[in-house]
Image (cartoon, rainbow, N blue to C red; front, top):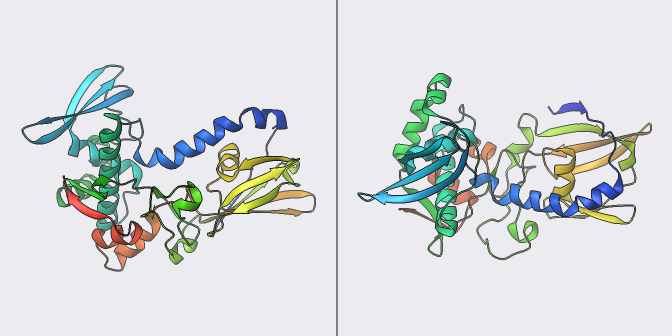
Length: 299
């Protein structure tokens, strides 16, 4: 059953919207492409840069924070990153699938740029306090070094919390053929997830908004208001919506949005990964479903 919020936009003038348009578009792209791979170390101050090195055939990373540099094994780092990306209560096989995705994204960024962007990280102390340390340690041991590749390179292992019933196709979302493994996959159980549907009241100035383009799974690609256009992800970021899959309705002079799913909808749905794990699927089967045609290899 979805949640109902009263979220009233105070004053969003159209000139401000257009002034910020490019900024929000870039933010939407950043959220879609970088956030699943993003990492931040909260051990000793704010992380600024992460670099990879190899010692005795083992990958290490040097994390630069505002309090100095800290070196740690890359596999240790992957544990904390994964723990910040997926609910600790999820089944081990779903956690293992997420760990492979996190590791893949880490290697993809390091190989491309030599470093990664900041993001979320949980320390072992935090995991022990949560009672989840052993699960994540086991997931790391059983997937150590494993990454997904396409044509010899780490893939963009995009993921999100919960789709709107189907994941999205990268060709429609990103307007490129570069990610042939990111195709739409059916996730029927996602529609029954907690908070899979959210109802929000918004300012009546949006009442005349027109949804001018959707992708094949229902996510909004473009809206129009007063002759001006905005992308669905831009609108989502502007109002802080759970996803860009929504409908607009007006009742008694009030304007409402019904939003489906949580996240951008591209790649692996963590909720469906969990349901697959609960029905006996292992992490390799989960990854093969969401990233078809990729190779699971060990670095």
